[in-house]
Amino acid sequence: MLRQQAVYQASALCGAALCSSLERGAIATLLRRRHASQAAPAPVEAPTLPPFDYTPPPYTGPPKDEVLSLRKKYLNPAIFHHFKHPVMIVDGKMQYLFDETGRRYLDAFGGIVTVSVGHCHPEVNAAVIEQTQRLQHTTSIYLNNQIAEYAAELAARMPGNLKNVYFVNSGSEANDMAMMMARLYTGSHDIITLRNAYHGLSEATMGLLGQHTWKVPLPQGAGVHHALNPNPYRGVFGNDGPAYARDVADLIAAATPGRVAGFIHETVQGVGGAVPLADGYLPEVYKMIREAGGVCIADEVQTGFGRTGSAYWGFQNQGVLPDIVTMAKGIGNGLPLAAVVTTPEIAQVLAARLHFNTFGGNPVSCAAGRAVLRVIEKEGLQQNCVDVGGYLMHKLRELQAKHSIIGDVRGLGLMVGVELVKDRATKEPALQETAVVFERCKDLGLLLGKGGLYGNVYRIKPPMCWTHADVDFMAAVMDQALSEL
Image (cartoon, rainbow, N blue to C red):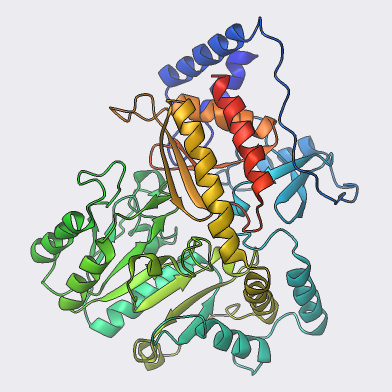
């Protein structure tokens, strides 16, 4: 049974393909040793979740086995799930999730960085219900107050002349549109992005991807050039941003006509493993891109709306002002909503032809988006990301001091990564150990995210309402799981 569990844990998707038979054997050996070493000592008491005054209503749907069977039969096989025994989530409240038995879990991943203010936040729910009862859908060919008021409220939170909004439904759509606008506005085609980047899985945005694990063997990325990733932990220049920026200058000179359409970046690479860009990188690159006639595009799909704590928008942490900003995920607290915000001058390029998005600016989604903005301010969630995020980094670094397998702890606010390595000197990814601890944390009541090119990074990006007590529970769970290796 142990060997079977180990084999499946190895195959949990983590930004990489299924492990080899050799790796599966290594995991089985690892687990045998772990359990053998635990045979003598008394069992360790599992950490206890913080008190929480909510009981979910009884679940009355089909059993988990039937749901899994239906999923396997009718959903595309590309739609994967985590864990050997997948968790079935049927209820959520703020930072907690509940399975069909009523068991509570601490959500450390926020629906892949999408639940910003908390699951089923009462103010967001009320706004959605009220708008749904009045009008579920009308397109932008008619006037509606929600889309107009929301655009004004969102623009008011943007710096500079970023005052024009186009609502779409996902981050991929937003980045696809940003690429098109950059090319139309500049009259150039070449776009520079980063290795290890993730900007979506549409056919166009797949060309921007800097990780082979998400790419399919189709023609993609015409005119896209991938610069060295300014990764302070694994990069060749450490935390020297200007040194990495010189590669962008070389790309422009060697791989383009000398003129570019733009540069697109995350400020903290999300799917790539919560990797902040090296200090001083963006100011240098923005200058180079603009000198080459291009525009600068900040992908704020994961870093926006105060998640980094130190700034409302991730790009502000490096003191730059983009020409186009894309946003999604936390913008709607789980509803399908995204936006492209730019200057009126750049926005004008879309008016040269008919352009339309059926669901973009849907009144229900816009009502939710407006409520999210209000809640972030009323509940001080950006400051909470500073306070709780700082405590989170402190507790994780305590774990790093105790467990040599933790090679790096990094991030900003409540967008944090923990990278496991076999050896801190060689930084060899600890793939098998990552999978084992990932599964064990779930068993103990903690739902982590996982990513990075090698699948050896825990992505901790919870709802922004996390508390110090939640951090204590997370740290205790991770400590126990790591100690059992």
